Length: 281
Length: 302
Image (cartoon, rainbow over all chains, first blue to last red; front, side, top):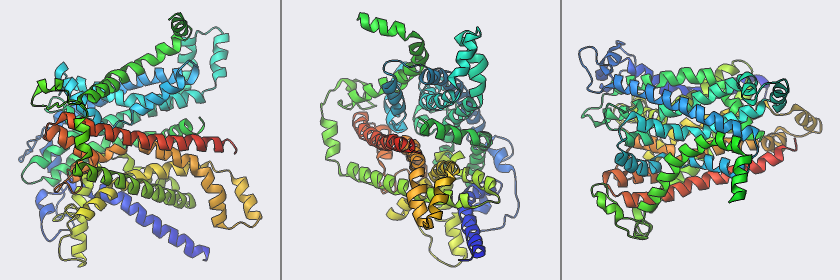
């Protein structure tokens, strides 16, 4: 095959793949700015007649046709829960990751393995006993209860990522600093932490996204506006008689925006973290 | 006892550092799992709290072993995972090789490729529920406007079409993990052996089969390992798209657990099912981590 035709062929295939990847998301975004009436019209209207911000106003409780779903509260819950559980998971995971990267101690390998295995438990399976226990403890349907669970599910992966990043920082630097009179603690804060900082940041963003997107556990552990997160709240729409597709699309856009921004920030480190953590052993 | 105490004293620092991580996993994962293991031997129903002490031995397990619906859901789950994981790997590999070939606009392409990773599973489910809807969905509307069909295709109602739709959503979401990690492998691919092979007269296919693919294997297994950690997130997709219905046609193990536990309030039996689901997840993870460890040893040769 002449190389010219080959290049053209590659471009056509690439275009179609990119279309499949982008189309669903773009269609949701477009629908979020259309009216529900227009979405429901048969035969389909392909070119939007009038684009509007009403769906966003409606789900946040402004404008004429207010949706009975407290998206603003869900948004606030999601933020509080995700940020707190990320901070905790980062703190706990980082200390753990550092220990695994820098010290050798009896039981290190099995401890690491068990930590990772805990992540494989399906959310829905884990939700059953937690639902019962949290109910008895009285922390069901509270932000605290959800934060506790999200912190725990984020710890294993945070340990894994930070361990990889700390291991990339040569141990010599830390030893040299200690010879020069630093304590181990100072050596950590002044040498190792700054060097691993970007990696730790991406571990944090990864944890945030996991909490932000979690559904299986949150859907069982939250019941009211006090603690429901955005993904759980999205299902509120399906309980209504006629599904407000436009409203759902608007809410989907609200959920995706923070994730979009954060993933762009972290993409380079994320790939590096995943591959180094895994391959270089 | 004194030996244990000495071990703790000698390793006080690392033990102290890992203890918060171990403690929270113990509290939020291990203890609940022990509790649910106990309840799987009881006749526990949510509506009757005292039934927690109603020990029934292996009855829950015997029941689910003889439960046809359970085995159908189990079989469907295994089929679903096998189809989805294999296709994700295949498409991911293809996509990575394709993007690797492109020189102009490759960075943009890589960013676009990561797009599905940003979506939470619940959003992926919703988006395809919307797209595949039989009255207002983009796919049906498109086919009708083009005149390819006059009847609406019941993507989320028909048994196999619904299975296809769910698998499509799952594959759409997870292919990029494979593509990105394999692409990272392609970037790290050493050029010398390939050039040497070409000089020796190897064809493109031979180079791919004997040099590129073996080098990529660890990256493929990392992707598999990462992916296998949360195979159960398909629950989110199915829950929003079909809820396991209609009439249990898309029921996976995880939606069946959810229905048994929360709708039928049979916690004991649901917990017994959970243990089957947990074993399934552990099997997938164990399998791919083993492969990863083997591949790591081979990579040492490069």
